[in-house]
Length: 424
Image 1 (cartoon, rainbow, N blue to C red):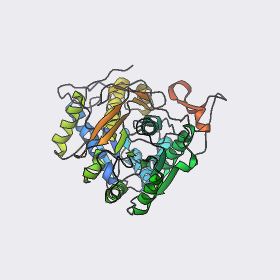
Image 2: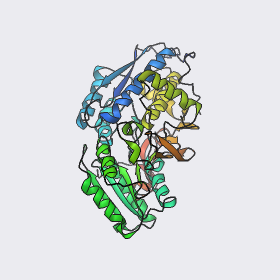
Image 3: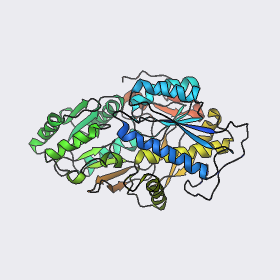
Image 4: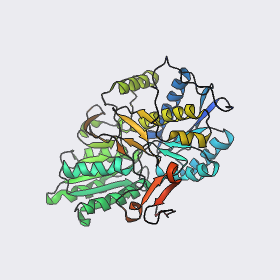
């Protein structure tokens, strides 16, 4: 396994003499929406990458070069992610990209990354069912978030009926497809699973919340699994409060709501509702205290940290260490150096980059508190991310192994590398 160097040690220089001629500065592309419906979540990630770049420069830069953040705004416009990714790689000639939030934005950029052999670190929980040699997925796969959250509902809260509420795009649809299959395998009847999708920016939640409340009228415990994204969450939680739905009545576990999204809400009526992530700001570790302190010193005391920020923190530092080891920012060389990279996560333990381009990470479940933070009520040891779920028939036979088999979709039955057609 590879060694790591601490991010926030300002006295340590991790610059190294390049093994190959290195163009300066080293350019880091930032592909996050700064306007539109996803700006509520993505602007913070742009700020995070800029902070990481500045800290890296304070620590001596990289390969004898200054590191420069090159920021573009794809403006929550999914086709624009492809255009901006191409601009970063061909016009700006960046060495790496950190970016995207929604799966549709990632999938928009993916063909450009593969065509131009670019490298992107994707920091957000997602639906899995993908593995590209040009993307490292530092957010959670379904087995590191969605499945453990459902298990918590079943085993700890006794939930018998499930409302799967999501924004209408690839991540919620694929995740809920996986969750429906999983729930049925656990004995939940099809009629006890309510699935609903709404567009980005949806604001009128009265009817949908009413439908969820109606599910509980026979006395059985109802739980909401939320894959609602962006600013639509504001209206959803406000409607729950208006309907006087408490976490004791109908608990909600969210996969796209963290500290940043809650910072714009009155959370007094949301206490006890849940989120499943791999990180919360409230984690009590020395590394997290340092990270939070550095963030607040830079951005202000009212700014919070969240899970995708930690994913960028881990991914950025793994990339720095891989570049240092390779002695170059060349994508092919860095990719090979990434396998087996280790870096301490902020909640204790160590994240490891796996051959399927996913991390081994802990799974945390937190309860919303009155101050907009989360009380961590459950935490596992590191769980290896699974690119292909075991709960869909076609996916269960697939594995991803880039350094071993040079394949992201290796069929274990036919022992061959295959391509499958996505339904989404």
